[in-house]
Length: 273
Image (cartoon, rainbow, N blue to C red; front, side, top):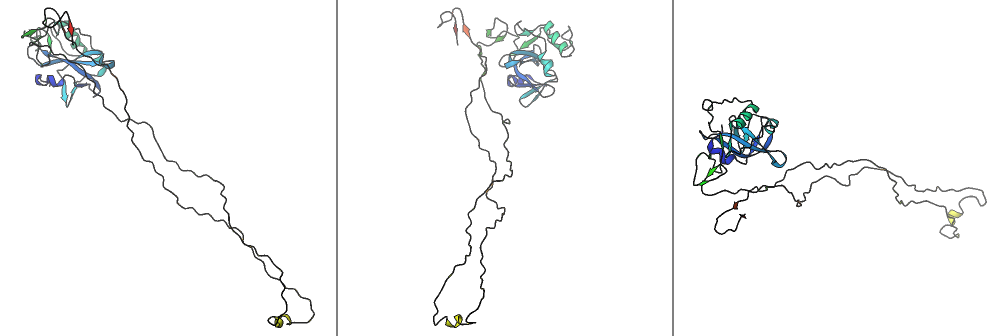
């Protein structure tokens, strides 16, 4: 159950539905005028938070920095539109429509149901209800102290990691012609004559003086021989490098303005900041 002490911390936090899906950020929290307990929250829905829907907090739960409610995102987005223009309060007809939309019981006798007779009031930036006049009174409805708080939205940009593609290694076999120069040797017969000398006379006169005969020698030559073997030549692998660059992002932000009108020292007519 959400307590009044948690109100200030929960404004601007993320609201999730029954399936833990993000619905939007909490804009305001409305308190019970009599008990001061949080009763309704507004959540920014639609494109860039352009719409605001009311969600009951009776069965809400706080988990970390999120508010969890037992309703679906579509049910919240389809909630009846509420003007909340009556001094920051919900009138009975508006609250009745909201109760019926969320399937909750609603009675006209507000005291019997524990609900305030005067409606539900909106919180200020201190998490208190606008039920009594303070030092400064907002003529449009809410009662505050002697100052007005000006708020604005600020962009907080971050990053998320998403898949940008895949890289893979693939190996295949292809055939190519390769020429290699191989030196080869070949023997050839060459005719030589030598004179008869004392050194070779014995060999020359060995045999008959006149005869027919043949003498031969074997000639050889080298031929190229090709053999193939597979040898490792290199290793290939994929590595990842990270490059950093600057990207510009843009988003619409809302900013409150404060004007001074009337007899105010230091101003001429209307000022704004």
